[in-house]
Image (cartoon, rainbow, N blue to C red):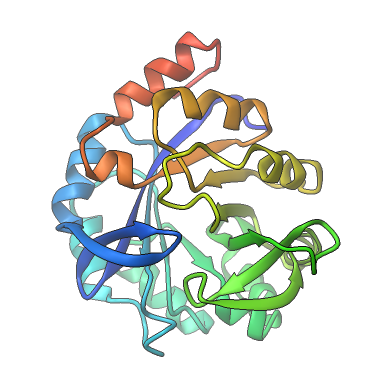
Length: 253
């Protein structure tokens, strides 16, 4: 685990607007990504994650102009995901202001993509986005999904994470589809399982609803916590979460 906990607001973007739903369904408008990015930067966010949630479904690239406009407003690491299929996509995103990229569906379809990106840009720029759900079909109890949680694969979440790390992934963004948007708390068992099987940092995502949900995720092994709804709806600020973590005896940036 890292010494300092990172707090990362997530901007799920579709058609140039931030959206949010429950279990990746019934997406609703949550605001302008540039305005929200600036708000979270001012609140003290350690990083921002920008995920174009319909890029893969629509079979298109990430919206570069929105990424560029967002990057111009913040001076913290920006991770961008959605529709990344080649090293050229990564190069273009970096030129647009992205510090790191997140891969999911395209890496599952062609795992060599991970090695290609890592070899050219380094593991530090590459995040594996894992959208997982509980399944009796998987040995670990968790199966990997693609296309924004719409499609189940035959990949066991732990097995795929291990393979991706060997190929050069520098970080795991572990999102629980079951918990996503429910505000019922992070999937602690999933976080602990991933921590036990990963030598790279683990970002916990999916289920945050209250400040009290964040410390257990870190104690379970997460190096960073990511949330969307509670920030977009102004139910919590980044500062609220950092104060809770600090009060729990955890070190924040």
